[in-house]
Image: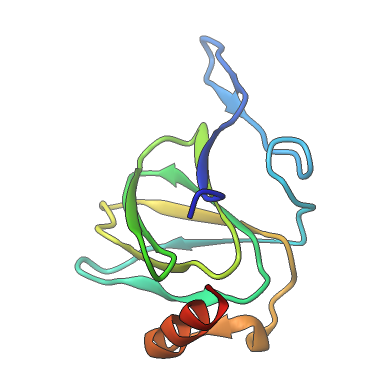
Length: 135
C-alpha cells in the first residue's frame, strides 16, 4: 500500500481560470496508454470493485467528489477525492472501490496499459488468496 500515494499536479493560476496538466513518466510514474472517465453515477452506486494484476492507474476528481477505497489485503485506506489538481496513484494488486459520488462528479482514470480483461481480478476472495500467497 505504501506505493499508493497522493500526487500533487502542477496548478497554473490565472484570473481567467486555472489550468492543470499531467505528463506521463513525469508527474505520474508510467507512460499513459489509456484515459477514461466515470460520470452520471446514480446516487448510492459503487464503481470499480476489482484489482489489477499489472495495471497502474492514476485517479483524479475532475469535478465534484467521490471516495476512493484502497485495500492491499492487509491494510485499507480511503481518499476523499475532491480536487482536480491532485490525484492518487494506484499500483498493481490493490483492490479498489469508488463510492459516495456527489451530483455532477467526474472521475478521470489514467491507465498504464490498454484494456485487458485478463488483468482484472473481480472476485475479492480470489484477490485475498493471491495477496496472501505472495506475502
